[in-house]
Image: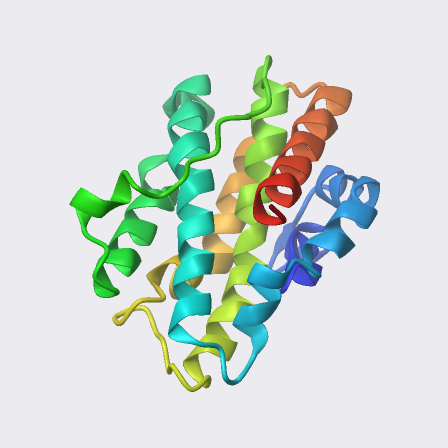
Amino acid sequence: MDFTRILSALGGRRIGRMFIPRIFKDLLQQNADTHRKLGEIPVLVALEKQNVTHEEYVAALEKMYGLYAALEPKLETAVNWGQLGVDFNERKRLPLLERDLQKFGIGKDKLNEIPVCTNLPELRTMSEVLGCMAVIEGSTAGAAATAQKLAVSNLKLGPHNGAEFFNNYGDKRNEMRMSFATAVTRQTLNKDEFLSGGKKAFDLFYTWLSN
């Protein structure tokens, strides 16, 4: 995945008529080193190749599944998303991963065999939860870049034949990122906690995906 694009569209610039808050850019800047190292992880680098193999792609999906199977349910219950103005259901990645894996013959009966992350960070406050979620929402930019490369790879993968996870929001990507940013700005945030939650997310992604 092209992690050099994570949060780039959320970093203190205008998208259409909306100005994205500076705190998102601060989050990326404070995690620049981890951000860079994420782009060097072999399981993700493989997805950038024209000749990415079936085995390499499924391995990447399984690593992502192992992370989101643990993290997403925790985030879903961490705060009252409805009160924050966020529809968590429409932002879920786990169902997309499950459908993609099914396309490659890994049905629900085999999902339990995929190793799942057990070392999740503690997110103690709303601000930390939103900081963590900001990294996930920002990663849609990198996922879109990966989706473009998968579409022209030898596997020719798209949202209907095994790459739904990387296409996630599709044409609504900017709209979804902006709506999340709007919801964040409406909250009374503790900046240090928000940045802490983001760092925990970056560290989690790196630790899990690099092992």
